Amino acid sequence: MRSGELKHGGAGSAWARLREDVFRWVTRRHRADGRQAVIGRDRVYILPTRQGYMLVAMLLVMLLGSINYSNNMAFLLTFLVVGIGHNAMWYTHRNLLGLRATVLPVDPVFAGTPALITLRLEEQDGRPREAIHLSAGGAPSRPAFLPPGGSTEVSVALEPRPRGLYRLPRQRLSTRYPLGLLEAWTWLTLDTELLVYPIPVSLDAISLSGDDRDGTQTASAGRTDTTPDEIREYRPGDAPNRIAWKAVARSGQLFVRDAGSGDADPVWLDWDGVPVSDPETRLSALCHEVLQANAEGQPYGLRLPGTRIGPDAGPDHLARCLRALAVFGLPGQPTA
Image (tube, rainbow, N blue to C red; front, side, top):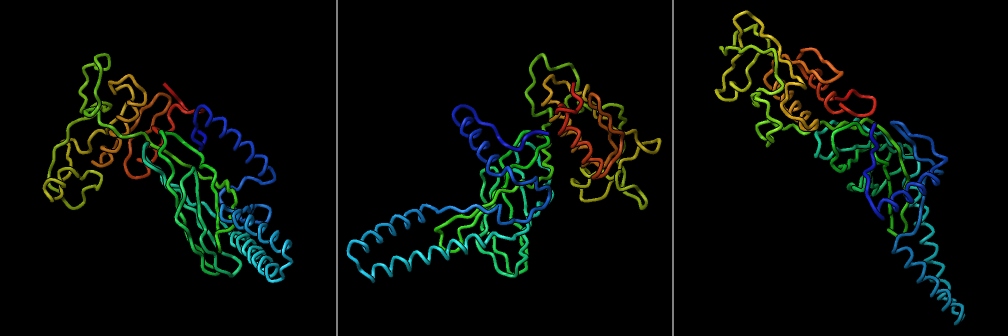
C-alpha cells in the first residue's frame, strides 16, 4: 500500500523527515487509532499563538513596571490579565478533551481529483464545543461546532494523487477557542482505504506515436469477442442491462439491444487489445472502456496480466474492475 504522504525534494525533504522524526518521538506512547479514537489528556498539546506570545511579553513588561514603581494597581491589573490567560488555557485544552473521532469511508476518486476525508466528531461530556478545526495533508477545514451531547461531520479535501491504494495522511484536530491566545491540538492516525482510479481517457483523445499504432481500430481498442447488436423498442420483461442508454439519450424513448440469437456475447476488455505501449495509458484507456461498457448496460469482462474478471454487469462489477485497474502493478499486485 502506498504511503499517504506526498514527497518533496531538496531542503524541503530534509525538513519533512525532521518533522516526521519529531512527530514519532512525541507520539511514541500513542497506539494506532484504527477507525475511531477518543482524545484523552495524554494526546492534547497546547502552546501560545503569536498573540499569546505577545501577551506574555506585555505581561513581563507590566510586571517589571509594577515592581519598579511599587504600584499596587499595576500589580492588580497584571495578575488579573494573568488569571484571564490561565482560564483561557484551561478552556482551550478542555475544548478538545474527551471528543470521539471516527473516520468515515472515503469514496474512490479518479486520479487528479481531490479525495474528501470526513470525520464524525461526537461530544460525550454534555458541553458545547466551539471552533474545532480539522486538517490533513496541509488542507484545513471550516470550523465545526458541536452541541452538548451531539455530533457533527467535518470534511477536508486532500491533494490529488496518482492512481493507487493509499493510507490516509495524519489528521490534526485543533482549536483556539475562546480567545485565540493559545492553540490546543491533537494528532490522529485514523485509517481507512483511499482508492484512486486511473484517469479515464479515450484512445481517440490520445496522440499515439508511430510505434504505438498496430492497425487496431482505436474506437474498439481493448474490446474482443463481441458481436454487433440490433436496436429495437423496449418490451415489458426485457432485462434492464440490455437497455441502450445512448439511444435513450438521443430519442427520449426506451430501446434495447437485441442479438438475433438471444443474449449477445459479452464484451471482453483486454490489456493486449489496447494498441499502446505505455502501461499507464493502457490503464486509462481500459478505465474509459469499463465506464463506457457499464453506461451501456452490457455484460463485460476484464483481462489484465495475472488478473481475469469474468463478464458481469452492475455497480459491484464496476467497482471490482476499477479497483483492479487502480492497484495494477503495485507491490503485491500482478504487473506486465
